[in-house]
Image (cartoon, rainbow, N blue to C red; front, side, top):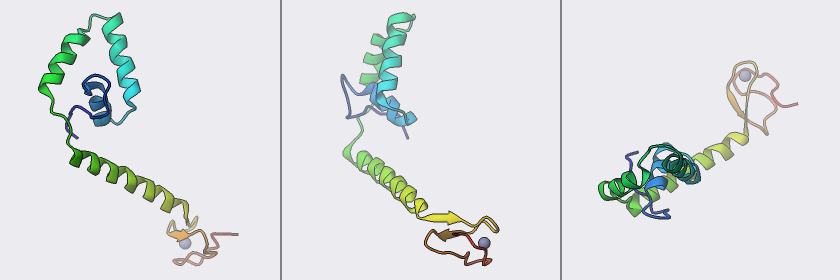
Length: 109
Ligand SMILES: [Zn+2]
């Protein structure tokens, strides 16, 4: 994902944009950013202004795409909870099944 400013913003969405492109909670980046700005020689304010001017704001389509992606992950997770793996051959079978459809091993006692 290309770095862009987020619409989930406090000032201009730069920190949240970074967070979304790295895949972490925006609060973590905001904290780190503020920490570096206050306690180190990092020119956070200047860099923030530059990033605000340079980076585009994400458009709604990218958010839709992002939501679809997280929905898909949720769905996959839910689906995997309904399955178990055969200890004998590793084939995925439904939890409701007692025997592995591949090797006949008892997978659910
Ligand atoms: Zn099996």
